[in-house]
Length: 149
Length: 167
Image 1 (cartoon, rainbow over the protein chains, first blue to last red):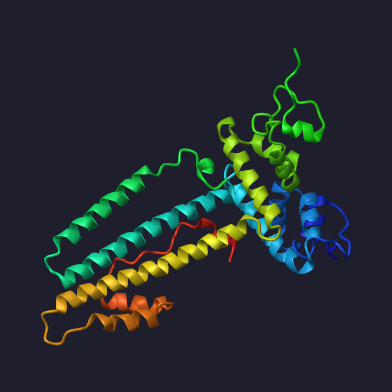
Image 2 (cartoon, rainbow over the protein chains, first blue to last red):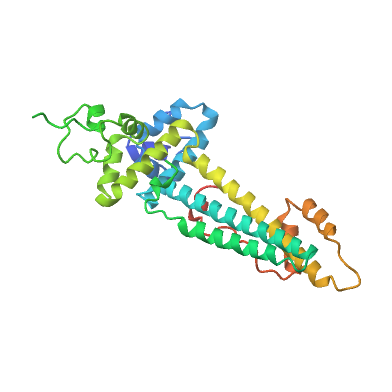
């Protein structure tokens, strides 16, 4: 006969009561989920955090805590902040590429209207050079202190 | 000659700040809020364990990221940093969409320029309804790109290794 304890109470070796706040979010069939969260936050901090929230938001909160805990276990230095930094870099790269592409469109359109528009082509080349300089100027010797804190 | 003042952690925890206090280099006494928020979210003992497992050179960055995460969690107790991650992913998706549209427009213009010598000319405005109608439909755009034999479409970021943890 199974004891019916949630993963949290099983890990903490305590009785799992009917009103255990952790049991809905840390079921016994996924013990690793609680282990990860407990390693980073600790059971009491997780309990306190969930108790602050209305019941209908606790599942999302537990999921996000698990996600962040997993990120921190995989990358003990930067955790999910490393992922945020990577996404910001991707956004910057995509924005640069979009600007270049839109400039290219402008040049192509102007060339289409005036096939001998060499000045427009020169402007476009200058813009490309400018973008290359901007990209080269980006350096992140210290990822965390480079902007988002 | 007085002793140096205790670090913010030892001040908050009300204990003697030893010379080899693991927190002292990263939680100076003039920034009490920094340790307070990290302690609130992670707990002092967890932070201590985390720092002990890291080489000394990486601890400053680790503390900075922990402070960032703790601040995010206090501001948004439900989603914490995950809220920011979702927002950034949405931004990337939108930018990729705009980029795909722009690249399609380039192909359209190139096709028009190549066919400008043909008797039946495609007017530039003919492309616009297509682009506008399919602005939110990447499938249509990719079909158009396949027709144009393009290999210049930006790919989805394939290296978001944490995608599997969060849907």
